[in-house]
Length: 146
Image 1 (cartoon, rainbow, N blue to C red):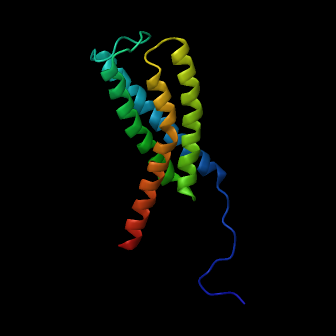
Image 2: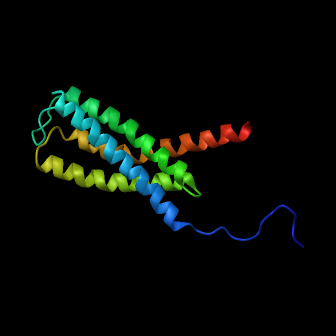
Image 3: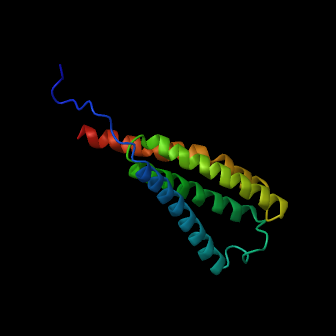
């Protein structure tokens, strides 16, 4: 006996939409981060590309806007996810952790600035993903209450 109003058919996995959601967040993070970096290089806030960025203030500035951008990118991924939005945001966070870890290894080896900056960038990937995913979850709860 079937209960009215409940669809017992399983939902399709929509793997393509899941991949696109994660890629959209990743592209958003890359484009916005590099775009703002370029603006600061052109304005002379940062040294020219390829030169070490040793000033603590410059590194704090870069870390601060990258954290905001990472949260926004993970929010976007959660928003576009066909289901399980927090899981999609965390997947993007894991990708960010891996890429940032490789970037940290390279930056430290090439002495492109203080080691704490790329290390903190890598360590912030998963917390940013969680915050972005939870911001979307909070948005969903507030819109469902209205």
